[in-house]
Length: 622
Image (cartoon, rainbow, N blue to C red; front, side, top):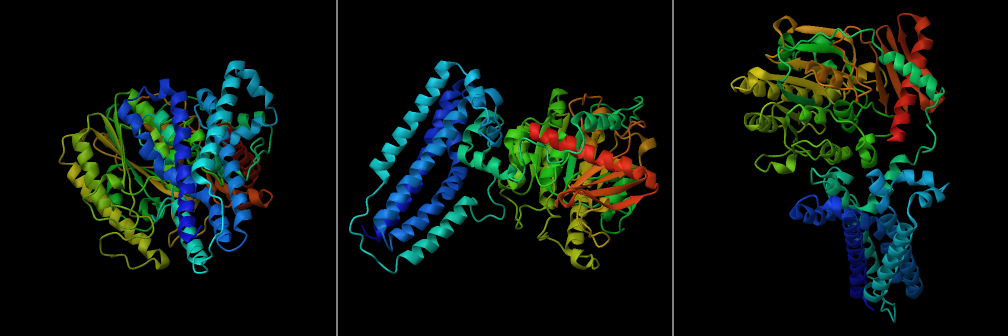
């Protein structure tokens, strides 16, 4: 064997894993044929090309050790390292075959592929056997054995190569190892793009069964373990009281004396344009206590709209913001529920409420939705149309994607052609680092945050151009415009990452459908990002009972509070009389205590801990 044959040997192992994954996928599709083939046959065929990138990523994770072993094979003791390589591949075949086969019936029951929760049942494996019929158990084990036997036989027959009389080439090992390591690194992250590959990369259909079929089972399982490795999945790490006590406290927070909702809209079925503002801090808006001149257009909209001046994002990242705004699910410290398909598919979705009311729905973004697995989550929301940067080929792009000016034009086109009533949503991009928007930078103040301030000024001008054009369209008169940020951002005014000021975001309702007496109104009560769902649906007279964490803040009897997390394992709790923060990673230390009445501190601490305890309990249960 010479060095060329070693290169071919390496590539053959890589191809084996790719074929092995596709065979497992065919098994999954065949087993769940009644579900899968509910879709058109052409749509089913799309499973295979859409699965390829995630399969390559999974295969590259597997190829790390083979690259090292073949490096040593080319240097010393080739025969023995090759035997290690063979048994390493055998072990992986058995592991992946086990995941593939034993998740088949799991998907029938739970609607998810094998994930970290499986470990919960390792303590009592007999439970699974009690549930399944004996014939099915025998069938699954027979399939498992056959899959392993055929795979190992094929590997030995077609891939495995004995090392006989290897002619060493001392110039080969180093470049082989360097190129191999680079190739594996690029492959496992899904390419050279700025955002590493996420599970949602293989999502392509509004039929979630097809998306699940396209998902690599090994990648899904390992990602589920990684996402939850820091917690004991059998116990809530944020347990301070009995569940009954914490749940009673939460119940009292959400109990209202009566419903006297103030209806600020002149119609119950307006079109809705929902603009999610990337990284917009309330510090950009003078009416929220911010700096004037950064977002003059937005402030002019506030003069004619209904502004919530004390709204707080529940998290610090876009994926957390999406779960809050669409599913009204609060953020969790150190974790993100929409990074885990087995969890987010159990979340309610505001989109469903709109669709049931006869709305056409769309979601638009100029970048890559794979960040934070947002694409998978959004597809599970079952929008009628989802578009991202790659769907628009006629615009120049920045490093993260197509900038807001061009995308607002696409939003306008969508509104012009969409069936009414519509819910058209757009997630902006330009206010995210690296701030390479195509414009001048008129803001000269701000120090290190000057690029951010200029990006906000740019997006603000794009909002102005969009609204100006929208006013010329016939659908405008019957349209409610909703503006809310996904999370906040450091500003020259506030750089501390823990207090509520860092989570303060703009939330504005605007449009001719707002009754004249409420235009220009400033709502100065404490509001959470998750409250947008119940508040908006209430205005449209649509039910929202499933969104248990969201409250209708336009009911004067709704209690005021907001919860938010920060990334180093803590949360902040805001009430009308002040705020406090809890650092759970530091023995639950209280800090940032800013209250007008110190006697309220014990109550606030209890509420804050109970809220997080119940949020995380539900997170674990999803």
